[in-house]
Length: 319
Ligand code: B12
Ligand code: SF4
Ligand code: SF4
Image (cartoon, rainbow, N blue to C red; front, side, top):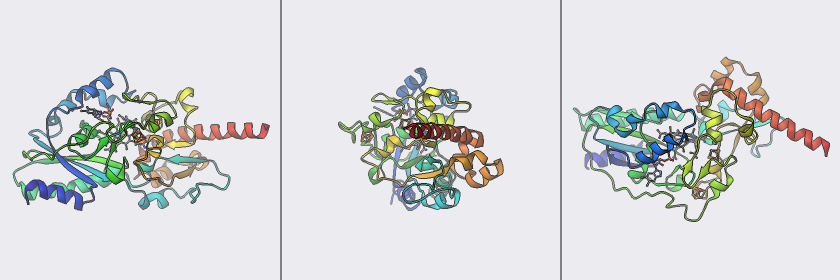
């Protein structure tokens, strides 16, 4: 087996749904990313604009980089769903009178950053065995790498109108990760395309509760996922009125996609959130993606869900 085959089959052994190799050079989608930043679509995620130049050249992440092994890892729900989210959950999602808030699917498990970093460490070990003098570095999400663009170029799948990478049977329910290498690895043929698997469908665009999606991409200034996870401080009324029962993240544009299998929604009791202490928050959510918004953020979101519920109940009572 060639070194490339060894790395790719090891990635699969370690759980990757799909893996490919690309040359480390100026990303194909870089100009698109720059236009997106220039249009202000990154909202106040300044960690994207502040590293604008670094996205052009992966040497900023690993000096001497020549190749990237790109991985799509499946999202898991089973492991923590029951232990971290015991407040309320039933087969039907009904909740014995309590007010429930929905948690995004990707967040109902151990934080994917920790889980995938362990996988990348094991893949790095294989890289060391193959190339004792080579260097490598595994990254997931937080480095200035355009991961969807890398996955598209590596032939891992297609980019849908919901802007996410769709990967075979897993649809968009995958997380992406990259192992950067100083070795000149042969690239895998890229065959992905934008909207190639969407054809005339536009369900995600039509279903988005805030109109954040269009055929030209996603505007984070309108995306609930941005407001509920990334944004610090109050949420404007116009956006809050569209939050519905979401207390962390948003899955609408994935749930409606015909390429995704249906998932069982997971809810938490928003009153339990409002009573929660920092210690309880850490115990329950510290190792999950929910920790990203902090207890203040989760309480802010829970308050919005609760208020909406009260308004709905008041109007029911008036009937
Ligand atoms: C910033 C960010 C967000 C922002 C903005 C999202 C966005 N769509 O850009 C917010 C906070 C809203 C967000 C939300 C979510 N995110 Co996010 N996010 C990121 C992050 C850090 C950067 C994304 C980025 O660069 N956006 C910039 C814009 C311009 O990207 P874009 O429109 O998709 O276009 C790019 C490519 O698609 C490609 N491209 C697109 N079209 C074309 C056409 C051609 C011709 C070419 C050549 C290239 C090309 O080039 C562009 C530049 O890279 C990545 C991790 C990473 N380092 O990449 C995770 C990432 C995209 N997020 C992820 C996830 C899971 C989510 C959520 C599902 C979480 C949730 N349930 O709430 C939602 C989904 C919302 C959505 N529909 O996108 C996963 C996506 C996995 C996948 N299957 O694609 C990633 C990859 C994290 C990871 N490591 O797994 N996220
Ligand atoms: S995550 Fe929700 S708000 Fe954001 S684009 Fe998708 S459907 Fe719209
Ligand atoms: S819902 Fe339809 S348009 Fe949106 S990503 Fe899925 S297939 Fe494409």
